[in-house]
Image (cartoon, rainbow, N blue to C red; front, top):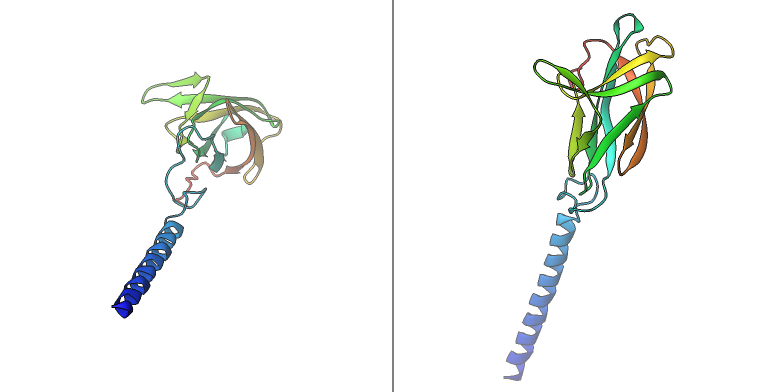
Length: 169
């Protein structure tokens, strides 16, 4: 009987150890949902974590007014708003929303929690006027994006061919 009891204790201890190790491996495999790991969205209320991607300005005809496009990604659990855009290389940068038949200037654009604000052809976009020097292909224009909660993010936006489409080149 004593040998049988010792075997049970050893078996139970082994089962407990296997469960603990298996659970630990599961937790490591699942991760904590950190930045850029493809994990779960950030919890509601966590601060906005903004980044800018796919920025470009199609070369304007004769150096005049130009549109600007980009994507603002928010990996945080709290939304933000783009409230101002400026540039040391242009006298005016305004935010616009296009619909099927109109274009209107807007004062702010939402950046949703765990989402993105996309400025793209046919939708939300920037209008850039009063260039300090005529833009040429390959030039970069600094844009200062000011957000209600996050503050200002400066990005260098390249001037591309008029027909440029990100992801299609």
